[in-house]
Figure 1 (cartoon, rainbow, N blue to C red):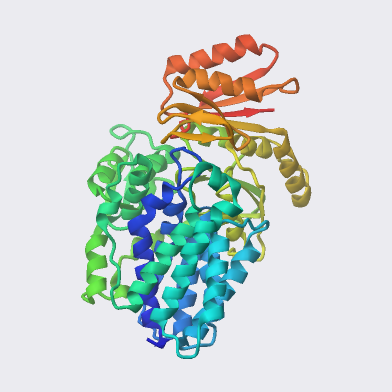
Figure 2 (cartoon, helix red, strand yellow):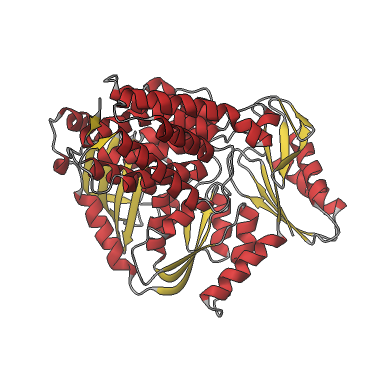
Length: 562
């Protein structure tokens, strides 16, 4: 094959995304730290899936139109640093095809190199030994070896062979990879994408293997289930609340949280005694049974999205016939309710209901659900910025793997009246301290500087469990032990959760410490929480201690020392 058009590129993208989906658990397993939140594969998978959905039903033959649409889809769906970098690669790739209806191998090679350029530019401090290295070296190798007569089949052989060699070299460029004995996970994911694209060129398009979602890893399985809920049932209803004599009192925050735990793509609009809901769920009956405790339905609509997807793929259903009406009506109502913009609004990423409450107490207006095990997408942040409805919006990502997605969202906001600042908090304790330093009397720039500066005063630690034996920085870690992480390093290993927590706190506290904030995870028993509190109160009686239930998964304790 010497030339490709938009439809061939569409097949290549979808096949690449499918191949990544089929292998993302093994990409996740390449995580450097032996913790249960290796999510590079998941983040890249969800990013590519977002792009694939945008082009799934497009019939364009123009290659630039397909590339641009796919790139835009990956930008909106980008999650985590790996997902953002991947989206930037495809954004640049699409720019390299601008003005072209078809592409030959040289055009394709030039587009890849444009992707490299854009991806490197998007990272403030590019690190070699990562996906950036793999895409750069493989793209340059392809450019150096193609000839006028080179076919796409041969081009992908060249690209993939060098990408594999580049991946093998990543431990030599990034010492932590060599110490732990793994290759770069992002680079490994990129090769899976390339391999899937090559299969499409050879007319052996890769389909999704649904067995991938049946992983033994609970974090992976949970993520896969969330993704699969993009299908299931689109459930929409309008409900009249009350009467109070026979129905439960309605609490919008609690109602939204419960519905959010049973599905996604959730929109809840509450207007006096009327509630409008749109949600994608695998079990609409559970949603309706819960909702009916608060009122009676005026209108219900349930559509099988899995069946619609199948009919779209086979041509039995036109794209314009897919469900839209109630969600559009709900969105319009929400826009009407926004009203005049406020001067300031704060947005924070939160990973548990107790943390949600704490953020709201200190003035956070919009909570974005997410955290280490499920990073929110750039589109999630765009939606949150709109919901904040303010001229100056401050975002606290509260995770190092979310900062890039939040920053990318800033460039995607199309409202010229809105200025968005990303306060680069990398932990929940940093987010708490940073947001407390917001001053409604100060201007936006001063607030940004002050809140960003406040992050330096916080030391953050966390307790979780090890998913494999390992040795990092001289600390021997055993599978299923509890490990304490401080300043991005594992400093504690213990078979006892409370003992690990005590040792971590002892490591974090110094003579300058005046406040300890301890957020308790969902797995911690009441007696364990009390033991930690009593230990800290007795040993560090001169330090203020704020311990509360955070409800976060995976991490038994999140600790902030100031």
